Image (cartoon, rainbow, N blue to C red; front, side, top):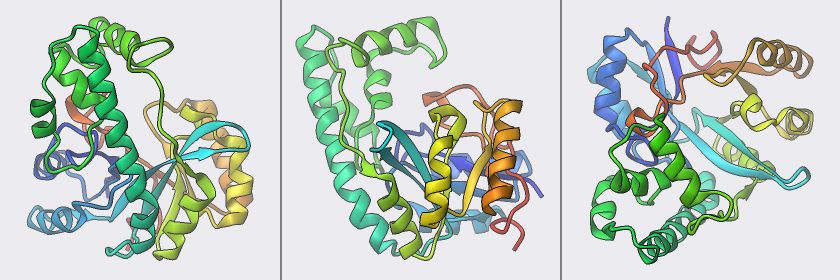
Length: 269
């Protein structure tokens, strides 16, 4: 049984449509998959329907862009198998999507003022069926270079980081509210790639608040991450998940299913 529980689509900052992802998943003999688009539950019913066509189990998913205010750092929370109406998740995340979109509009304006020839109309058309513009959509209009190329990364850093004309970030949601919203919608809450965002210190506190699991398998995780996660999972009785964090051309080059999820209650039904 092969599962990839961390993929993104055009509903957020992924390059590919849901069907294109599922076609690739079928080719890679994936049996279970979860679309965890950022801060949106949109597209889940479409994914389930198309997944049935390809005989792939689609597990409802989301990746919430949260914040650990105690330690002043970002933390991502994955939600799985929640009620499809996702009332509590949407109430928390919809304002976040609006903030992200408005911030992106400001970034586009700043980049235009800096002399770059980019079209808001073209960028807006490229996000469909999503509802918010991400930096990846802006970069796609600025360069045809691949995500991992030196040209792309230098341009990205010069515009969006440190003193770049489009630097700055939005206000994210409190991480405990993210876990709570997922649990209220009868979902399973998992902390995403703690090795990438250095979220380990937070796990004991989240476990008390209802956290169900930790993402163990991720392209950025090392053997040391795996050992630490195994220890924390055993101590706090947490399930283990994993996936590729696939974004298509908007992210690092990786094949769907190249990083698999460990066996867990989500995929062993």
